[in-house]
Every structure is written in C-alpha cells, then in structure tokens.
Length: 247
Image (cartoon, rainbow, N blue to C red; front, side):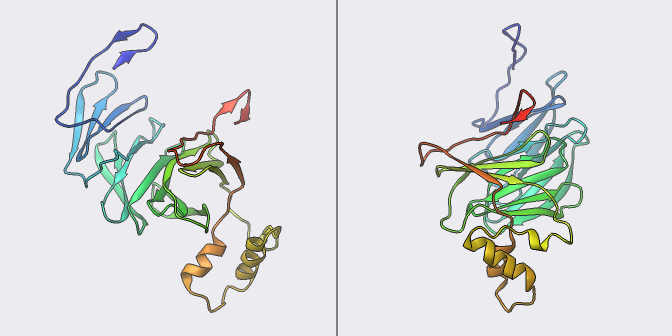
C-alpha cells in the first residue's frame, strides 16, 4: 500500500495464495484470493476479518461499495449458480444472499450509495439490479437476444441513474434506471420490431406465452450504446462526470 502523493510505501502484506483482486473505499480494503477474502481496516491496515472457504473464485470476482456508510462487500455465493453474497464489511457479518441468476456470476457492481447491486451471469444476456437491503429485484435489462457474450464490467453513474455494461463484443450498452409509471404503457418505443412486440406483450399480459418468451420482451432495453473499434477483447467501462456532464 503506497501513499500516492508522497510516493512512499505505507505497508506491505503477503498472503497464502495469489492475489486476484483488490478493492478499497475510505473504510476498508479487501483482498480477494481464490478461496478467501481478507478485510483490512483502512486506518491502520490491520486485518479485521477473514472470510474463509468461499466458493472457488478463480477470476477474483468481488465488489466493494464506494460508500463508507453502506460499506458492503459482494462476492459469489456459489460456483454453479448466480448467487450473490452480501457482507457487511463494517459490522463484519453476512447481510443477505441474493439468488440473482441461474448461471454463475460474471460481473458485480455497487451503486455509489451502496444500496443497489448490479449483476450479470456467464450467459451474458440479462443484467439485473437488486436492493441490498431486502434482495428485491429493482430492474432487469436485456443486453441482447442474438448471442451470449462474456460480460467484462458493469458500472453505475455517480448519480445512479445510469448503468453501463461492456463485454467481449464491440458494443457498450447504457441502461437508464427509472421506474415506469402505471400510465406509461403506451410510451414503449415502437421504432423497431422489438418495440412493437414489447408493446403487444405489455398490453396483453394474459397472453399464453412461455415465461422465458415474455421475459425477453418485457425486460428493459439499452437507453444508448457505443461501438468500439475492436471486438474480442475484455473491455472495461465506466460512467464518469467531466465538467458537470456524464461521459
């Protein structure tokens, strides 16, 4: 751990296995190994808790909320299905387990407040946002219907109104997080065939269609997208504020 401005080393620690990921906020520093997580107190850098025997996590998948007030840690609760374990990194106790996906997790991200968590699975077609407090699903977005992809990163905007998603394809998707009003049924965009069918499925909720079919047309779609010049790489993305505008 180094002091950025002074260019000096504050401390150093060695671990029993390869360090796969490091996360920190103003209260905690978390070090992720393949089968354990070490939680350090940021003030004196001492280890205050160790989560041992976690499900195998070879990609070091974990997320730490930016907020010190809601200082939650998220990591896979299973290696076979998409369960998210939420851990209170200040009070050092498990908070909630969220059954997010049928397939293993590929990406996790907290909102700035730490009260929402976004997830994607290895299948890579659906992104979901859950409440950290009770585990309820707040939003569900469909990245696409054409192909399964490898989700590389999820990131909330600082205002928590937008969520971006990148993968190994050339497209970055941006989703808008807004709750539709009860009178918003007729506002579904119909500028393409998906829009027309989405509106039809929304208006005729008793249609005798399989649930996985209706899910495709009732899930939110991208608010905007960006095309990158190269596909096949593990792209990362972030929404930031530059000169008071989201970029």
